[in-house]
Length: 156
Image (cartoon, rainbow, N blue to C red; front, side, top):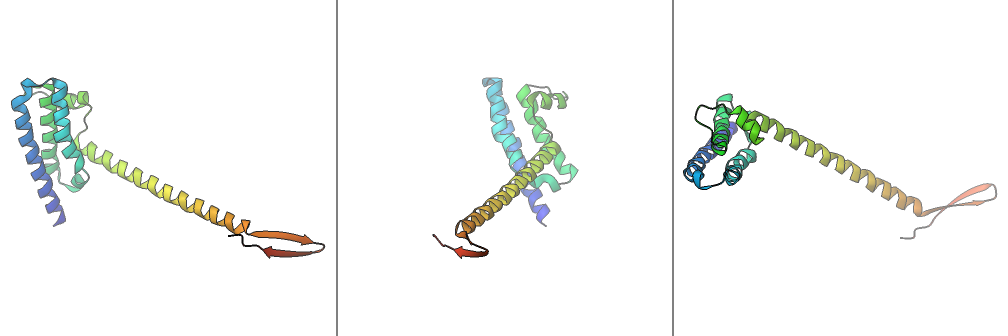
């Protein structure tokens, strides 16, 4: 149920990406190539990047639909013809395939989560160390002759 909802939302989003690409295609001759690449990156790749973790459970057929959006954007950006191979265009543009995008995003999220956990553990250790330092600062050891007497002095 949840996967079908995610599929429906993502595929609807990518249909709108094709609409945006059609609109950009109409004005592509009026724009320099750098502006064209910026538009496609802003509207298309940001949309793919936004929900690519949700795409990790999609079927290959649905992932191929998403990849076709990226391929169309790369072709439009570079001015490639209909039957040109897309892989070199993606490499030249420094764009990843959708499976690589998903893997990269998941790795980044796991890495950030691990750093967050490490940061939280470090904060706990520092807090313990500070608390132990405060407790030790309140105690004084006094030695009188052969007997040891501990006097607790709270200076808080």
